[in-house]
Image (cartoon, rainbow, N blue to C red; front, side, top):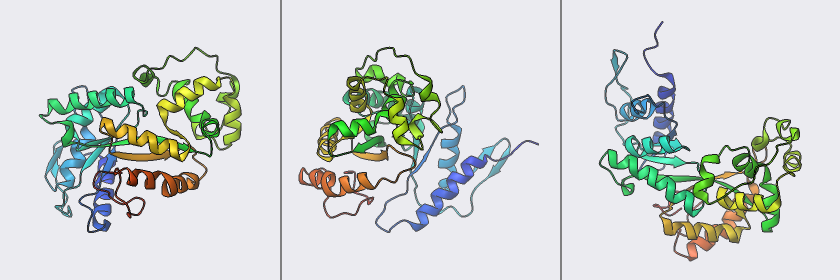
Length: 289
């Protein structure tokens, strides 16, 4: 039996409409991030379907035409999540913006923006027409050394196990070839989502500290709260305006990061004119986040 409607897209549409209905009055729109199902022709089916249905327009899927009768008529931007070059280009071409999980240093940001701009040009658009959100792995501590120690599992997973391998070149890194010990593969459920974080840290002892330091600097915001504020300020010079902060651990809440940003990072960004002061965490800051 052939399925007429893409259920995944319908779930995303329903979620977007529910969030839109409950959003504060001052919010201009609600963002829906999604991965793309890219065909050989380069069309991102899920993004196209979601945008069409959210707009209340009719769509044809395998010969079945239909529309959502309960679409709000309110514009809801669709942001496409992307980590690879091809996906980033597609996001620039067909989505209202992109949620980029790529890393966070000058070389990476410039390269990712180039991919995004290439896709945008195919649709007759500019980078300024897109909402760009950088998904940034974040870990803070009282010292840079301790922050890097805590970030070891994430950094090693990204740079040594090669999850983010395609971004090492743009980051300007040349990582030495290392033999990965069996202890790494025994971490449950895996190194970057470890339930026992200290065991995961211990399993990464085969990676020298200087390599971890380089990976942390390319990966995201890893250091003291003051360091993180400085990094964010520096990246705004490249056009970075919106961050989606991703704390390192899966099984531990982000209390440390919440305190760091509330007490140090946000006040420093506000003093530098990079964030509106007096706004609650998570509120829309008109592009300065």
